[in-house]
Image (cartoon, rainbow, N blue to C red; front, side):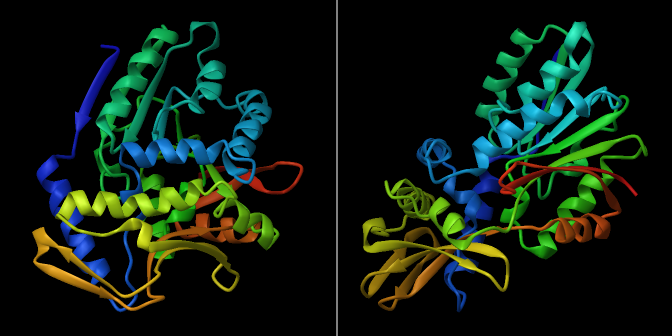
Length: 324
C-alpha cells in the first residue's frame, strides 16, 4: 500500500480546544492567543505572501541552505524513512526526497500535520512524482500526537524545518524535543532541525513588520478566526500590529494593540472582554538561537549536535542532531 492516513483530530475536539484557549488567553492579565489560530485558509495564503517578501529572509534562506547541504548530507547517511513534523505542503521536502529516492530507492514518508486537506493534496502529488515512495500520513497536532507515529521500518530521519521550534516557549520546546527523541530509537537515526539565529535587531524586526503591511494583515486575521470560532465581534482594524525584538528573551514578539477602548463579546463563551486603549493581545513569539543555545536545547532532550550548517550571512542554521 503506497498511501495510508491515520487521523487523530476531530472537529468537536478542535472546537473545544479553541474555546478553552480563547477563554484562558483573553481572560488572563496578559491577554494572548495561540499562534496556531493564524492558519485558517486566509491566514495560510497571507503567510505564503509573507515568505515571498524581501524583508522575510527565513524561508528562502533555509531553502537555499537545504539545496547546498543535501548532497553531502546523504553521502554517508541514507534514511529508509522520513518523518516530517508540521509538514504543511511538503514542498521543501522534495529536495530531500530527490536525493533519497534517486535511482528508484524505496523510502517511506510520514508527514504529520493538523490540516488533513493539505496532507491529502500534497501526498497525492508526491506519490505521483516519486514512484518508489510510500506515504503514511498522520493528521494531528505535533505537540500532542507524536506518540501516534508508528515505529520506524528502518533508519529514520526526522525533519522539523522552518524554525517552527522558535514558536514554542522553553517548556514546550523541551516537551516537543523529548517526543522527537522518542521517534529516534536507533543511534543511527537523525533529526534535521531548522533554527533562526540571533542577528541585527533591524533585520529581525523588519521581517515581522514589512513595509507592505502583509504581516499586519496576517496578525489581524487571527481575530477573524476567533470571531468565527466563538461568535465574537472583534473589529480587527481597531487593533494595530506591533512587532519588536525582546533581546533579554531572544525573541520577536507580535501583539495586537487596541487603538481605543473596546468591548468585545464572545457569544459561545458568554464573555465580554474589555480592552483599555493601548492594551494588547500577545499573538506570537518567535525565539532566535545561537549555536550554544541550540546545543543546550538538544542536550536536555537526549540529543547531540553532529552537524551545523549556516548561510554566509549567519542568518539561519540547519542542524543535524543524533541520539546521545
